[in-house]
Length: 225
Image 1 (cartoon, rainbow, N blue to C red):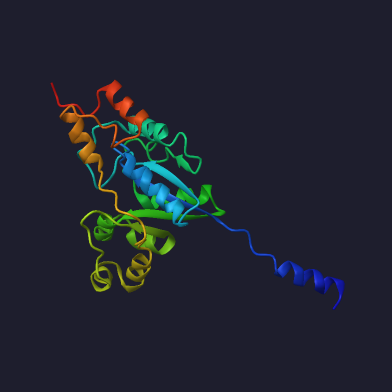
Image 2 (tube, rainbow, N blue to C red):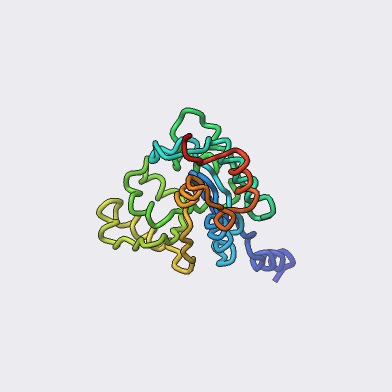
């Protein structure tokens, strides 16, 4: 064996650099709460991702009502919530789309250009999986990107035949293989937090302290006078 052959053999034994896995966590985050942060931490602990990128929606196409904080306020609360989490980050990519619906496929295409050397994984709640067939360009979305489907309280996974009837067999298999059954269920919800605020109840156990203080100082989610 020549020296050149030895060098080639040596190089072939070196493993390829591991791609950073970014879990893209989209949502209204109205407001962000401890359940969101616990889910993100559980993803890292389960070795499902290396980093979590939170993306608050600007104007969600599926939620035309019920958002009581401005996109800018939701963005500020997220930044406060993740301040001491090194593996968490926040993007304003959808908030900056003023006046336009926030379509997931468009956001992921842009992120893929920004992070070409990373593996993007879109976080999807089990409840959203049941409605995924209604999403914009869902065929391209499922074909082009990876998913992590997390459990939701009281929501059972769809059957493969039911999912295949709406999205096709290949997409159904891919999505069901993406279900992260090892992730715990976190029952707290933004709806619950807003309801507590309306009643004047404390939310220190539901939200990070800086977020609870932000909500209190600005009088967010209070009942109309």
